[in-house]
Length: 275
Ligand SMILES: Nc1ncnc2c1ncn2[C@@H]1O[C@H](COP(=O)(O)OP(=O)(O)OP(=O)(O)O)[C@@H](O)[C@H]1O
Ligand SMILES: [Mg+2]
Image (cartoon, rainbow, N blue to C red; front, side):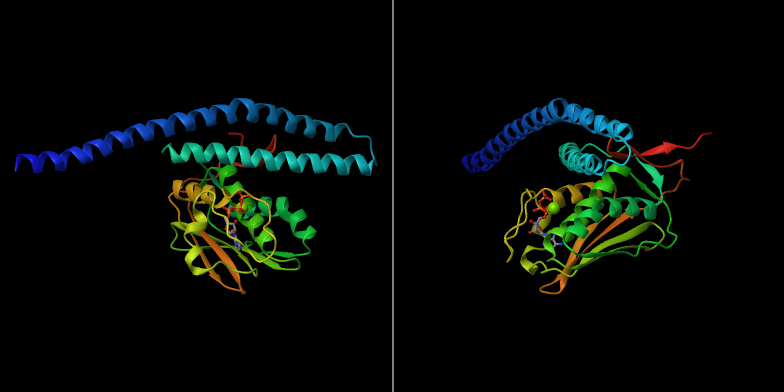
């Protein structure tokens, strides 16, 4: 009896110890990576973005070529910046840190900004993007820049995975007064039923018919962490050869808006109203 009791307890204890060691190693790795991104990439990149923004105001008038080159540099730096902030957020959310920088904001304005920043991609692929989020909706309680990056990720996926000439729709509606429901719909190839859950896992990339567009497979895992971190939900509905719709819900704000959306060194923030 004694031996059985011992052997029963010995294995779980060993497993627990191994689990703790692995978790500690993972935490150390996560900290190293976050420090590296924070100090070695985030700050110099912020300098590049603000310098490019200042250069825009200093350009000689009517120099279309310079302006075009500057806009390409600004949008490319913006892409890297969004990736860097999403990696930082992913690390923070995975380690269980709560989202603290939340504001009451108009979801229609937030979608408008996201659509604006993806228009070039839509044009390049000769697609159409219809923004149906234009009715009056309750304010949502969110980390503005984080949710802006969630919308950008979903719209960029729709652009990337839908063939040339395709159609994308973005929409929003209230549900029960507690949440606002959003969707990003495309008429692309669809996602097979067996893959619909795992597309939200880190580094998952499905093999499509057309040569795989570039990406590393962290977009949707960041979206899931961000939305769940806000107390919302995210899911996908899809029909093969017909298209895919990503849905998400975000909480309605119980407070009044205290400012307007504002762009600052490539990020979307809030400009507080004067008291
Ligand atoms: N709208 C969509 N239609 C069809 N497949 C999609 C769609 N959105 C995502 N997927 C599939 O889900 C996978 C995971 O998406 P996710 O956004 O996480 O990564 P990614 O786009 O490959 O790379 P990253 O976002 O890191 O640049 C994609 O590689 C693609 O196979
Ligand atoms: Mg993506």
